[in-house]
Amino acid sequence: MDGLQRWRILRLHVEDGIPLTALATDTGIGLRTLSRWHARYRDGGIAALGNLPRADTGTRRMAPELVAFVEHLALTRPRPSIATLHRLTRGEAARLEVKAPSYATVRAVVRSLDPAMVTLALEGPAAYRDRHELVFRHRAERPNATWQADHTELDILIAGAGGKPERPWLTTVMDDYSRAICGYMVFAGAPSAMNTALALRQAIWRKSEPSWAMCGIPDVLHVDHGSDFTSHHLEYTAVALKIRLIFSTVGRPQGRGKIERFFRTLNTEVLPALPGHLAADVPKPRPSIDLPALDQAIGEFIAQYNERTHREIGVSPKAAWVADGWLPRMPESLDQLDGLLLTVPTHRVVQRDGIHFQGQRYLSPTLASFVGRTITVRYDPRDLSEIRVYDHDTFICTAIDEAHPNQRLTLREIETARRARRRQLRKDINDRIPTTPRHEPEPPPSSAAPRRRRLRTYEEDD
Image 1 (cartoon, helix red, strand yellow):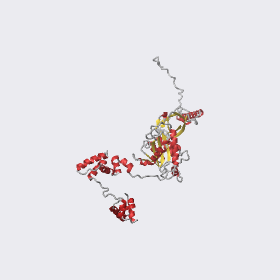
Image 2 (image 1 turned 135 degrees about the vertical axis):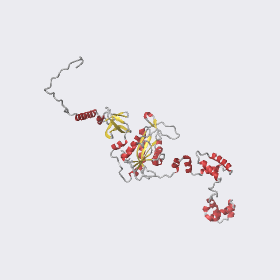
Image 3 (image 1 turned 90 degrees about the vertical axis):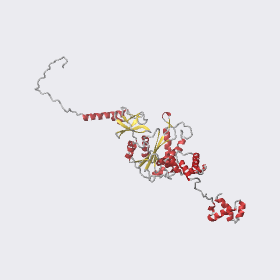
Image 4 (image 1 turned 60 degrees about the horizontal axis):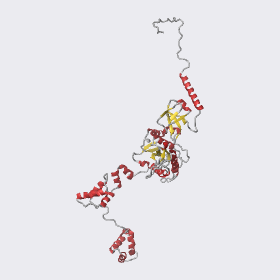
């Protein structure tokens, strides 16, 4: 019976004046119990009629030696079961010649241990840090002050090359202040420095969609310790663009919590509606969409995500990024950005019929003067209709795929480039070879004696 129920009975005596003896007869509650309730009411009011704690609350009803014995075993890896603990404790009680505790008492001792202490003792510092350590949630002071970049393997199967099922990856670049998605890259295969560079290229440069306003160079880029993020390529790019790279502590994902939450949102809101979604306790699905279709679906969701109100910041990521209007720090040109990010580590030799790259042939009239020379190719894997050609980090030209439907070179353009190349080579040759000889032979003197014939000794002599 709680305090409110006791007051409903006692109120008949306090407010209506019914004697306690009559009240005891009507309710069946003892007179001494009613008198005790009345005394408690006079001393502390209605609150005093509540259940009083036991006098031995918080004390162990077992020997301190046994309590220490149970706690020691409960914090030892591997921890024994409660039944095993109770059996071992009974044996220890017999050895100490004290009263053996019950099963419930041993279980109460184990459950009273501090959960943080149990986690640290049984699962180690990493588990303790992830569950019980105090976390400071930092937010950048303004847009483009800090960006986060990370990868995730998507819970979906797509049709890869030859119809083979593949599980794609997603690289995302997020602005820490506004939670806006500035760039992304969907790809098949393991994460690489090139895929990371493509996501950063999209994030930094201006988008073709007017609604996707996020762009610019961040002050800080927060990444993990993946091989693509720790590559010299990304480090060189960061130095050239004046970006400070910050790597999260190994084994501590808390610093990337914002972008991890976006990944969970994508996996719960977008992928379940697509064919090929991988769900728990469901047979492996048959892939029916390809990479471009998945890329389009994710791009449409990101456009909606940037426009809808974010629960934590109270406005949409786009509105938070645009704020009151400001100018982001931009690279000098797209060529400079491509030169820093889209660099293929292998080189190509310019053949007589163009550049052979990834099973295709690329041509440009400018390549006429580079036949037989080694060049560097930079490209966008999502659009192989053209490649950018560099010679020692100097942009040469854009070479076009010979099968490009809208951009094809004509024979006249190739002949013009060949003639110009020959004229330039002839000019260079003439510049190096004078028109008059440097040493002319001297004429023989007029008074020279006639040449005497040499006596032939053998028939073979000349």
